[in-house]
Amino acid sequence: MSSLQLFWFILIGVLFAGFFFLEGFDFGVGMSVQTLTKNDQEKDQVVQTIGPVWDGNEVWLISAGGAMFASFPMWYASLFSGYYLILFTILFGLIIRGVSFEFRSNMPEERKWIWNWTLSIGSFLVPFFFGILFTSMIQGMPIDSNGDMTARFTDYINLFSLVGGVALTLLCYLHGLNYISLKTTGPIRSRAKNYAQALYWVLYVGLVAFAVLLYLQTDFFALHPVSTITLLVVMVLLTVIANYCSYTNKELTAFLTSGFTLIALVTLLFTGLFPRVLISSTNATNNLLIANASSSPYTLKIMSYTAIGLLPFILAYIAWTYYIFRKRVKHTEIAGYGE
Image (cartoon, rainbow, N blue to C red):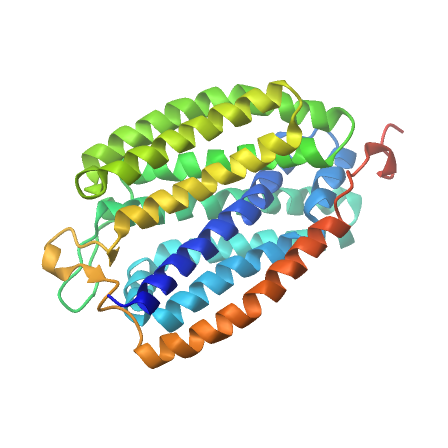
C-alpha cells in the first residue's frame, strides 16, 4: 500500500465525515418539520435555519462519491452495483427532499403540507438507508473473486443493519434538534431542547445495541481492538456531553459534540475496514483492499495536487457562508406568527 493510496482512503473518510456533520443536521431539521413544529409559522422558521446552507452541504456527498470513483474505481464499481437499490432509494430521498424546499415556498398555503411531508420523509430515508448500507458493508457481503456482489435481501436488511439505520437516523435527528436550539428563538427553541433531552436516553440504548452487534457481527474487535473500543467510548462520552449541554443551555457545545459523534462513527467504520474497502463474507481472499482497488499512481498523484490546491478555498468558502448566516432565525420575523 502506497502513501497516496492511504491518503485517498483517509480523504474519502474525511469527506463522508464532513457530509454527515453538515448534512446530518440538515436531515434532522427536515425530520423536525413534521415531528417538532405545531403550526405553519414554526415550520417556516425551522426551514429557514437551513435555507442558505442545505444544498451546499450535499456537495460533500457528491465529492465523496467522485473521489471514490476516481481514486478507487473497483471499490466504486462493486459498491454502487451491489447496493444499487439502496442507493436508488437514497437518491429518491435526496430528490424529493431537494425539490420540497422550492415547491413549498411557491405553493398556496393549503398545499404546503404535501411538501412538508416530502421534506420530512426524504430527510428520514437518506440517513436510515445510509445506516443500512454502511452497517451491512462492515458486516461483510457475498463478493466473488471478480468483485461482484451477489447478495440476498437478508444480507442487506438484518438486525444489525436495521439497528445501524435507526442509530444513524437518531443521531442526525438529535444533531438537527441541537441546531434548531442554536439557531432559533421562541417556543420551537425550548421544544427542541425538550425533545433532545428525552431522545438522548433512547440513543444510549441504541449505542449499546450497536456496540454489542458490532462485536458479534464484525471482526473489528479482533483486528483493531484498541481503535474500536476507543472510538466507541468517545462516541458515548460525546453523547453524554451533548446530553448534559442540552440541560445547561450550552447550545453550541451540544451542537458540536453531536456532530463530533457522527464524525467518530465514520472514523470507526473506516478504521475498522482498514486495510480493506469492502469485506467479503464468503472468502477473505475476495476482500477488496486499498492496495489493489485503487487507480494508478500517476492518477492519484495528479488528483492529490488538485485536491490540496482547491481544498483550502472550498473550506474558506464554507466557513464564510456559515459566518454570514450565523444569526438566529427569530420567531417574530416569521410572517403570521402569533396572529
